[in-house]
Image (cartoon, rainbow, N blue to C red):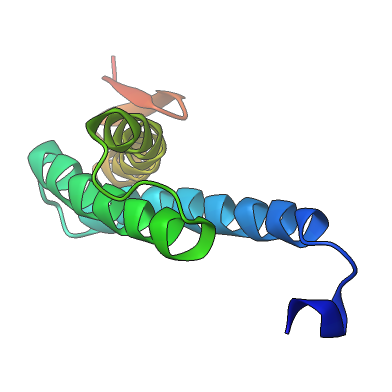
Amino acid sequence: MQGLFFETDTGVRYVLRALVLLVGFWTAWRTGKAVAEGWEGYVIVVVYTALLAILMRFLHFALFEGPFVSPFYYVIDFLLLLVLSTIGFQMRRTRQMVDNYYWLYDQTSAFSWKKKD
């Protein structure tokens, strides 16, 4: 079936890999943001990211014939996804603190706030 639509497999695989990474990274960012919106703690972000890393390992296995049970690649996936989910969590939590408690806090960056003087 591959010969019907494409001459070679390499270009399509690169595009598909990029799309899978994009969806995975976006999902991790949204996971962190959703946990912050529910006023949950950071531990929940780590748990959800661990589950998301298992899903990403499965996608790499199913689509690209990569290893499914590989601790090395799982840790790499987990750490990359954790960075993005942490960014989403911290950005949303900062916005929450500054918007909901505007009389107490000022935003110092996208990731932090401080008490008003």
